[in-house]
Length: 430
Image (cartoon, rainbow, N blue to C red; front, side, top):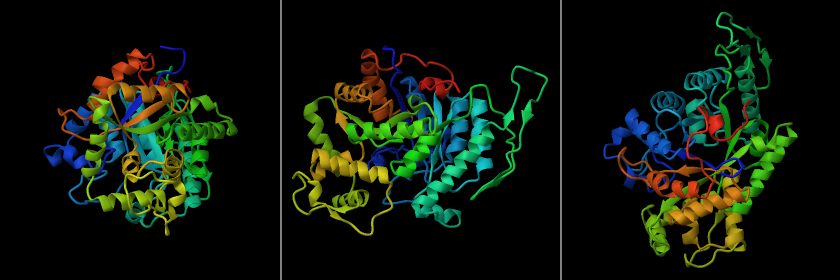
């Protein structure tokens, strides 16, 4: 392998996976399997077989049952992370938790506990929740964009101070070390501290974040070790990576210690000649075409021109749509840039908007290596579809057919580098 940091992979393994509209066709034979630990252990073991650094648990703490589709989120990610790290060795878990609908002390204690018990195999994906349906479950939404990020920044600041508030002397079996009260009194939170879980020698949980707006980039630059990004266009994602690293530098951090992992939905085909057929199948399997187009318009914040779905789509033909749906800025801006640079058809955009990459193992591996070598990505987050524990899914396709090609290219490890998530994605020791 070259002297640079190796490419790493994480796997998104939520109930509906990354292809939510298609996930029902891959659903477990028994719906109740989604509530059984063995189901999740099986998926984590598949990712571990491919030397994935982590599995990623997104979260929307609300129940939406639509047209027989799988629910987007069910089990609490922090609880599931504790169970998975106890059952599956080596691989880590990145759990999502909102900085708007939690208390800093409680969340710091939860993540610090799993961090300690798992040997550093935990990451916290901090989100500044946008969906008003989530807010309604917590006494009312925090919907104003600036307000959400101001509150999230203070939340993360408090949590990170709590992580280090009890310095336990790990080399001294007889002492309890020292602790300092936090005595935090801010705009949103008042926290006395210290935390009653000590900071381990390997440091705090890996901090993960996603957000394409200016506020999201600023938050990532200040706190994040790993940033999830939209992976529609290489140049756009590379520019995003530069923005995040510039923000990190402005906060006095080492910009090279902030890693970016775009999302990708790989769909492996036997031959490139199968690609158009599979694209059609993906659209057909995703439900009513009108609903798909309406959903795409929501994400774009624009009206799509009526007519030929095969015709090239030009940015000047998109009419602003008001009111705009509550979609993260990063997703909307990335899609608009995709239209601007590639002029896809509406049909192509329906698939590309999900981050879907249809190709042979060689094509997919070449795509990942190219982005890694060109500085657009440090790793990737693979969106997966559920499947039964023993069924082949696109995760198995990546593990069995793409990973060996990444290794042959000298881009991917042939074993875990260490025990912790920090070591296995190449972050410096804190």
